[in-house]
Length: 141
Picture (cartoon, rainbow, N blue to C red):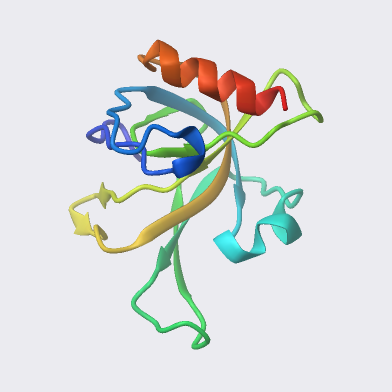
């Protein structure tokens, strides 16, 4: 179970805030597994248990990808990088976030792996106002 992880930094150019700190707490309620290249294909595929899929990126492109799944409980506080908030007209009470995080999970060093997951969150805390405004603009596109 993920309880507390150190906050990371935004790395996504879409937000136009590369490198700015994001000391936010994201409450995960449901996750959708996906690969960054298969985003559209798996966008609507949900799972019974919330989870974030970890892609072990050591394999070269075209050789396939190894996956490790971290299963987490609803309403777990998760600290990580928020990469983008795509527009969401389907469920206005939820926000979709793509998380790209370099994490240490249960003392297992996966710092060189990448996390790709579409995560529904119900709230985020501590987001700087200029970033929060940018997020809202992206959602309302």
